[in-house]
Length: 282
Image 1 (cartoon, helix red, strand yellow):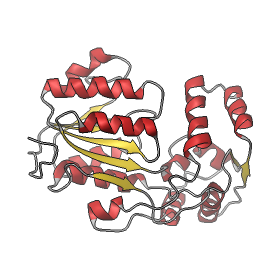
Image 2 (image 1 turned 90 degrees about the vertical axis):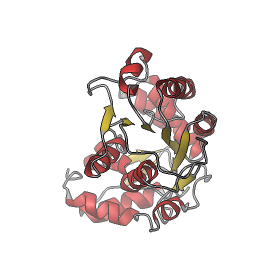
Image 3 (image 1 turned 135 degrees about the vertical axis):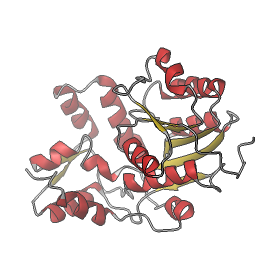
């Protein structure tokens, strides 16, 4: 079978890496709702999976037909390319037939990982995503929003934040429907906002005043280290804000519409729905 095969591979066992993460748990929920057999790939699952321990890979790959490949924390993180290369080879050896790769727009390292998957002989689809809206509610920006002030080294560069629900919908379509093999879907929201504008949307939705403060990149990195964040995470975040957030991804992409035939979720809708959950209450 070639990379461009359009016939649907039967819905055998699907391994979802990062099965407890922002996109992975949504992919798991959707596949289970479709009665697709799922194996979660995470430290807490049984069998357990760890990117840094290749001895955990054979057990999670046993009898697997398809893989949703999501690397934590990001394909731009140090060591990601080597890990994805090794894991992809292990998947091929284990008899996996299809892979859907979560990638990142504008990240050279992520696109190197894409090339690894594309050259593997597996049936592949790439979901190349913008900055997640859920970073404000399920990740490192949640605490600042709840504390009432978001301090970031982000100026006036706009970003069309993508909703994790849209990412999961595209991934599940690629895993379960015909017509997505060999596609690269760049997914984003329908409009670009600066981080200041995004925080203002959150404040309005939550009925709170949440100021946004722009700071120099070096000051931001120093504060992260003062808070005790690991050096590799600090380097990753400074890479994203200092390199990737330069306008290269400011133009909204059409991947959600191409894959699903509908518009992506707007950031304002994400903000209203999330605010209603109460998670941003101080």
